[in-house]
Each structure stands twice: as structure tokens, then as C-alpha cells.
Length: 287
Image (cartoon, rainbow, N blue to C red; front, side, top):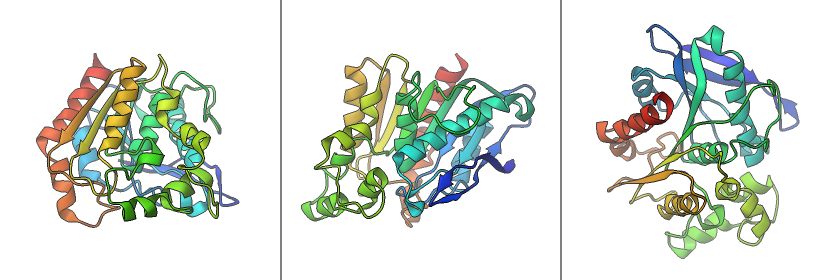
């Protein structure tokens, strides 16, 4: 484990802040294919120490796994900053691949909840220069695979499966959704500002270079509408980008740092679920 590697130092909240990553590398010979893990946290936190057991399981299958911090609403940052941070981390790791012992010819991004959204955005914008900023701009931020667990996609519909009161709370000005699109203290919403909602939707950027996506969602998710993953799958199909959706029966939102419910994560840490993820990674990164 290499801890607290500074991969970028962007401005957030009017101050320059170091963004760090933790990197797990198996003790075997040769460079390891890279998986960049993006934690969740409701766009409000980004604790790179989260979900260590799941990350370790993937690393034990022969992958280098980098868990990254990114800018959030706590510093007034928006999705544009978060996507830029993911891309900065990928470029940094490609620039330092030889010394770190990783193979970056093919890179996967793997995110949960808010991290699933950022993973989808990074994959959708592969092959373009959107959201590129910071250092190591001579390196590519393109990815070759996306694992998106219970992420959001069409932000204006994130609560469509829920009751009217919950939907109103999610869509209110200043909610965690709207703050991540418009910044703090804005009266704008993704429901009324259709252009802003399109600009924040990974489906908008899908193109021939977009990475294949494995979508996983629980049919009992009480935080992010299960239909969100279906919305993105439909968009992938329309744009002829490879995508597969897996529904985990009875599973709630599995982002344990965000949802303090130990039972919520159990269905997400089974051999069946984790094996689905690693088989997808094997196919996309090792074939």
C-alpha cells in the first residue's frame, strides 16, 4: 500500500488543496493493470479510505487499485471539478506508471454512488478533451472500462422512484444534487434548467470512444432511484456503447460511509457481486 500520494493540487474554496490517493499493488512480478476507485459520499465527502475490503478483493485478483480523493460541495466545488479530478488522477498514474509498477495501457474506473456518477462521466468523455485541467496534460485520461455501482446519471430524475416529499427534497434549490451542479447558494435546479442538467448527464457525452460500462444497482435502493441505471443503459444502447445492467435483488444503497447501516453493504460484498465486477475487469483489461 502506498498511502497519501499527492496527485493534484487544484483550487477549492479559494485555496489550493492537495488531492491524494492510496494505491494497492499485489506483490507479484510485472506491472499490474490499473483500476481507479472513486468513493461515494453524496457529493459532500470523498473519503479515499472507504470500502477497503472491496478494494482489497479486487487488488487480490491481480490489479493495482488506486482510491482517490476529489473535490466536493464542502468546498463549493461542482461536478466539473470532480470529473476533472478523476481525469487528473488517471493522467498522474499514467505519468508515473513505470516507477509505481502499474500497467496503464488499459485503465478502468470503478465508482459507487457519487463515485459511480463520476466514473460514468469519465468513461463517457473518453476520446474528448472535456474536463481536462491541471498537470500531466501530455498523458491521456481515457479509460477502457467503467464499473458503476448505484450511481446517479440523469440528475433531474434521481428521485423519480420515490414518494413526492422525498422527490421535492432532492430537487429543491441548494439540495446536494443542485449544489453539485450549480455551486452553493444558487436558486437554480436541474428540473428547471434543462441545459445544465444535460451538461451534467454522462449520456450527453457518449461517443464511439466511450468505455464499456457494467452497471450494478439494488432494486431496494432508498437513496438513488434504481431506474437511474436503466436510464443510462438505454442511453448506452442508443449510442451503441457496450453496457450491461445487473440488478441485485433486495439490495439497498451500498455506500456504507454515506449510509450508516451495516446491513446495507452485505449484498454488495458477496462473491457473486464482486466476481461479476472482476470478471468484467478481466474481460476489458486483460483480453
